[in-house]
Amino acid sequence: AAELFYDENADLSIIQGRTVAVIGYGSQGHAHALSLRDSGVDVRVGLPGGSKSRARAEAEGLRVVTPGEAAAEADLIMILTPDHIQRHVYTAEIEPNLQDGDALFFGHGFNIRFGYIKPPAGVDVCMVAPKGPGHLVRREYSEGRGVPVIVAVEQDATGGAWPLALSYAKAIGGLRAGGIKTTFTEETETDLFGEQAVLCGGMSALVQAGFETLIEAGYQPEVAYFECLHELKLIVDLMYEGGIAKQRWSISDTAEYGDYVSGPRIIDASVKARMKDVLTDIQDGTFANRFITDQDAGAPEFKQLRAKGEQHPIEATGRELRKLMSWVKSSDDDYVEGSAS
Ligand code: NDP
Ligand code: MG
Ligand code: MG
Image (cartoon, rainbow, N blue to C red; front, side, top):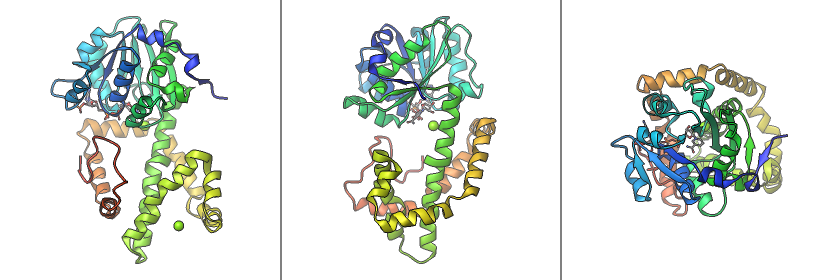
């Protein structure tokens, strides 16, 4: 069984005794920096000159310095830039400022798991990865709750890496919801698989294919949008509250029977076989290499795929319908509807 940790299993004073640098102030960075600060931790934010995030961090009363300065001041450095940028920031600004006894923290195991960052032997290497988007991590903390975290130690140079990682997890509210002990390998591979096969890749493709099927059969796009996308939230909320069982309890018997007889016709053994292929590409580094190679070339494939996704007709239909539903609002301060970014 998984090893679970809650607030009573962690000592907040450990992280309160450290000097922390949070590198990056995006989705996760802002949540970590603000909640650490509110938990009484000495925190500074590391951002390059000219960073768009700088003004937002300063408006919250945080001290912003360059990543190199932040790393030099701190004895615990949490790297929360996009994954494909981490090894550049690490090599240029962090590595030269690492001392034995320092701790290097991550919110996702990608760069350690695939060997893009190789920390020196004298530093602790830990992960505190919230299982939720950064804006929710911050909102839950502010409301006295938390988003569950998974915690891992790759390298325990000081002998104190575990209590330190748990203390950090407590300071961002993660242990109010619960922390699960994992490894960098398990976190990285399951995170990539989950987002590719189920949560993001699988779900987006399922919704688009259902929408297309109805449109191609001559049904109205607005009706297809409500059926295939809008209602998804209600279904997922039920699953979140009580599993697939609660969802099936709540829907009509007609829907439940259709679930049993048609679900396996859509998601059949061939889908699972391809899920295993996707997992293999993650495990053997094929996916990581493709992603990083594209990013290093200026992300041509990524940009082309993003533009193509934005042009899918379900987006235009949804934009019009959401305008009519004033209560459906984006909860992410940075997201602008219909902007290709
Ligand atoms: P974001 O894309 O939101 O982070 C962007 C931030 O990094 C911005 O503040 C950006 O500044 C800054 N940045 C860009 N380049 C540099 C640099 N060279 N030096 C310092 N800062 C820089 O990242 P996420 O929060 O999405 O991801 C951070 C980490 O957390 C990743 O490892 C990710 O896998 C992990 N994670 C993310 C989750 C999420 O909710 N998004 C969930 C769980 C884990 P500027 O404003 O100037 O661009
Ligand atoms: Mg992820
Ligand atoms: Mg229905």
